[in-house]
Each structure stands twice: as structure tokens, then as C-alpha cells.
Image (tube, rainbow, N blue to C red; front, side, top):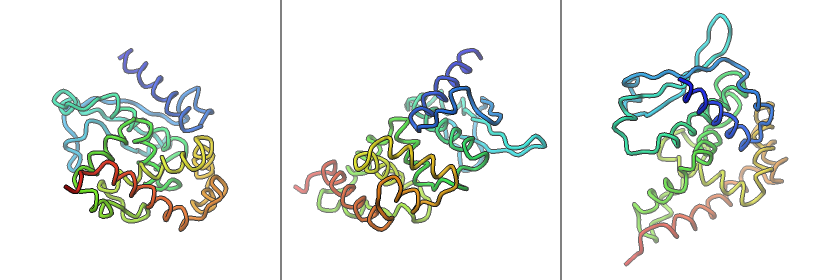
Length: 218
């Protein structure tokens, strides 16, 4: 129990720092608990961990559920999964509810992969499913329907943001979204770029990365 509390505190502080949310040094604003169980709900059977949102008479709260059965049989790094889900928990806490009310899925999932360190491997694994000349088929619209196959593109949107601006620009973008600014407004303020230009440049940036990681044409 003590080790779990320590892991939660360390992860929460590190995630908050990387997102530029320095007000979270002292912990979550809303209640959050960690629960261990064997198995997960339908649709999440293979999930090692997930965040569940709840409303009670005392207001918003959430819990991070760890699937002990899946963790014990998985080869994946549990710390990576834990940090991914903790990123979602921090963003939920920052808006006092479901983060998607203010933060688009592409930002949420891209950040979660960035913080957990899993993004590069996911992009590489996706790119190696095709030949270099076919890499264009991997490009996805980040504003399209939310889907797992778009995760590599979500992650590349975050790395493009940092490479084009800086980590400080990304953190300012996140804070503005939390404060309620819309994506075009927050993007323009952080990068001086409108959304169509951002998406066009992201496609060019992503294509080069996919081509570099894809299988050779011969």
C-alpha cells in the first residue's frame, strides 16, 4: 500500500511538471483512489489499467483501476501504462471532470504517449507494417473520429508541436485549453499558426517519419 501511494505521488508530480501544471505539486484537487482487481469491464478486457470517472454527492472523483490479472501476464512495462493513465487522471482533475470537455482526444492521447515514453515505439511499429512508398496510407486526420489506429498520429502531433515551438509552447497550449480557450485560439497563441496550417505541416512531418521507419521498397 505504501509503495502504491509513493508511486502515485511520484507519477502525479512528474506528469504535472511535464504538462506545465505546477499547481499540482501538492496533489490532486479532487479525490482519486487506486483500486486493484482481477479483470476489466467489457471492451477493456486486455487493459492493464484504466481511469474511471465518477460523480457522487460530494462531486467529481475518479479512480485508477489496475487489472492485476492482465499485469501479471503481460510483457509490457507496467510503469509506462501507469504513467499513461496517470496523465489522463491529471488532465481530468485539471478540468474537474471528463478532460474531453475541454481537451481534444488527440491532445490527451498524444500527451499520454509522450509522458509515458511509448510513442516512438508505437510509431515505429505502425510504420513497419508498410513499405516506404506506401507510408502515406498511415496519415490520419487528428480531428477525425477517435480511434486507436490514430494514436501514432496523435503522438506525432505532440512531437511536431514541441519541435516547431518548444515544450513551453506546448505547456501554454495545454493551460489555455484547461482555461476554456478553444483549440484554434490556443493553437494560434502558442504557435502563431491556424489549424489548417498545423494539420498540413503535421502531415508533411509525419510522412517523413513514417517513411524513415517503414520497410524498404526492395
